[in-house]
Image (cartoon, rainbow, N blue to C red):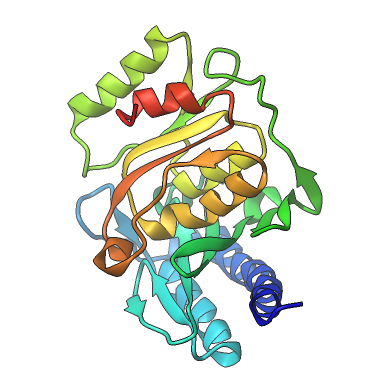
Length: 266
């Protein structure tokens, strides 16, 4: 076993344990969400609460206690560079809008990069009692069950996830939906891009496209999709690219060509 494999294994074990602990904390906040003070960020749809901040602080503390040399990027408190070559990329609660409105479509998303590539992806969906886990070369699992994508599924015979936010014009979103429907597909949007990427890995969705998304929303899902046998469009993880948004596309192999076309990549 190489030192890199040892480091990967240890971080994978920690990521799974942290996701469960963080998920339990987030679920406790969810169950008493009426007492939370909700703030807005960029616009009235972009919300945050003390739950997001405290869950991220918990994850940061657990990582720092075991791997103080690792970098860390979280949605709420930004980027802390590391020296080990590993960087944790975390969204403590992806789907805060569903969260504060009492809907179960939210998750805890934890990715680990090594040499700028997502090598660990763990997504916990506490309301559904689901834990999605993947690590480079180790496959993807849902609650311990191996995930393997069916290449016969296409946008015509399955559902596609679509994401939208205020970074993207309403006209562009309408065009995406129109193209997908004209191609014989259909779409779903549940308010959490990370969770919809996990659904791609689980075969519940055949693909996911969002024109502008951040690293903390997509990198865990990307690792899951790849390890389940799917494909993803690379996210710019080097330098400033890691903290800026970019297009996110992931799919099973039977839908790759049409999702690339939909996203203007082909």
